[in-house]
Amino acid sequence: MSDVPTLQRPLPLPPLALAMIGVMMGCMMDALIKHLGAAYTAVLIAAMRYVFGTMFSGATVMALKRKMPDGAGLRRHAVRAVASTGSAVLFFHCLTILPIAEATVLIFCAPLMIAPLAWWILGEKMQPIAAVSLVVGFVGVLITVQGAPEVADTARRMEGVISGVVASGLYALSVVLLRQLAQKDDAIVTAFLGNVFPAIYLIGPAILLGTAPAMADIPLFAVAGLTGFLLWFLLTQAYARAPAQSLAAAEYTALIWSALLGYFFFAETPRWQVWIGALVIVAAVTLSAWHSHREARTLAD
Image (cartoon, rainbow, N blue to C red; front, side, top):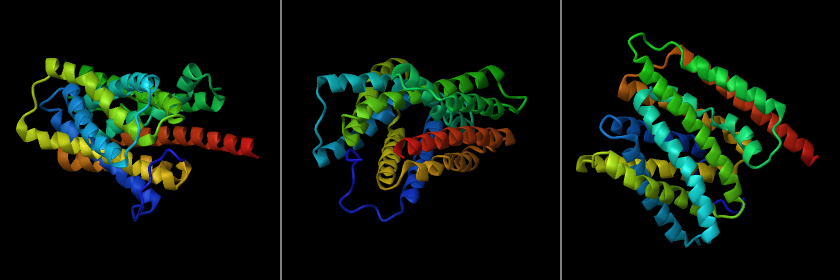
């Protein structure tokens, strides 16, 4: 993984610990976004998150003196950023409607959508087990969204669920497009451009649709940008030092962090359907990952 940035002195923590802390940073960002969502639109929140993300990732690019891609490369990043930007805005909107843990479970579906999108866009062969895993995963989604309180606004909840599922699909699309970029571009530059283009796309709509952020909230937007950057940075360091399969479990600790943050800061207690749905989705993703790993070992042998 020569394109993965490494430190001259690696962080003194095991890769799994780095991955878990990175996931926790992402959940902290989600909690901040949910808090800010009470006063601002998802478009404005996403714009500010990417503006500050650009500052932090840009400083890293400058410190490490990384080179930017050529014009064709920039266009590829710009196209991918359309999907990632849509995913972020919709997921942030989902967070303003649904409990954090429930929204987190919905985004767990993203890995299941990668196979059909890779088949459609990249022409990769889709294994039958991937289709089975996708069906099982959506059963998990159906379980997750059951059992809402009777006083809940059904239409509003449905808006949140649809936003979360579509955000998951767009995130999977951005991952598929990232596969093409990863073959040519540096990981730090990719992360930088993954902040720059969404910031460019969202600044105009944010000005037109949202109120200007209050000065008192600017530090919260900055922390959201910082935690988003740390999420990427720590996960990158973890995956640079350990196989992806050994770190997959860390991704699912997001449900634990989300449940704790939701409970302590928003008085949210996940329903039992959320936990069962999460187990079904994780099982589907694990089945797909196990099959892919077995296929790769077979080809290697």
